[in-house]
Image 1 (cartoon, rainbow, N blue to C red):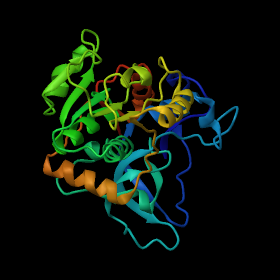
Image 2 (cartoon, rainbow, N blue to C red):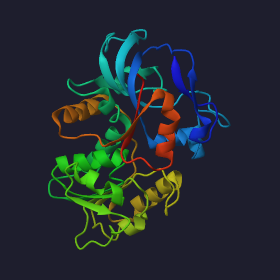
Image 3 (tube, one colour):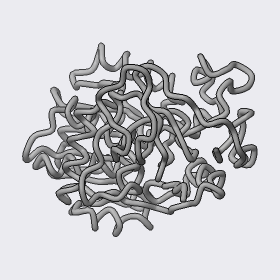
Amino acid sequence: MKSLLHTAYGEASDLRVGTTHTPTPRKGEVLIEVAAASVNAADVFMMRGVPRAVRMGRGLTRPKASLLGMDLAGTVVSLGPGVTEWSIGDQVFGQGIGTVAQFAVAPVDKLAALPAGVCPEHAATLPVAGVTALRGIRLADVRPGQRVVVTGAAGGVGQFAAQLAALAGAHVIAVCSGPNVERVRAMGIETVLDYETQDVLATEAPYDVVFDNAGAVRIKEWRTVVPRGGTILPNSGYEGPDGGALLRVAKTQWHRLVAPQRVRSFVANVSRPELTELGEHLAAGRIAPLVDTMFSLDNAPEALERVAAHRARGKVVITMS
């Protein structure tokens, strides 16, 4: 099969598209003919092997697995031993292994049925980013009337977090760069701040929830605008004033112990119930993906480079046809 090949840690220029063997599904897995995949920040971390913790289990000096990608949508073409949840020919979306390829295996419990009327390209944007957003909104217990700040609102997690918070009845304050303001507003978000010209900390009314997907504001600064009992979710893996991903997690745990606010980090494992819920929202038009660019498989390195360089204005999608 044709796939994006990842044979050394580095930049997108080190990736190439070539051929490798088609994987065989094991117990609890299915093989999917991939129609579309999407790129997440986590794919960039794995590509670079930075932070170095991502190399645990993947190879300390070079990647053991030559494939990249987690999100996918496509058709089940083969079943692993004992699999009864899915049948050959089922249209599905979810999380797989090495999904930037013509075929990929996926655990059966990390897939959901592709809803009628939803295209694979849109469904493929949901798994990692959508589930992360949904988990965060639930952890914060977002309720009608609350003031909820979502930073990185044009990014993968941020766009879905903003829409899901609005769907819950919150007053969403979305933060993004100037060129993205109108695109985020078009998602149905009334209050959109341009971080290049507006200070999200300069607010007259406090925020009930902060869902920070950018990491450009220190946790201690967020605490000045969130009252006792409010929630702060630092959710960026990129380098910022609080350091990189691991240091930010450590600082989150420290603030969790001393702050009057609820400062929390969380892990979002993709599951079928959450995928199904997101798929239903997508099919009903309650949420919609903000798609930046679609690339063919032959141009997959460019897709990774666009996300790695922070040039993407929404989700980057890779199609296999």
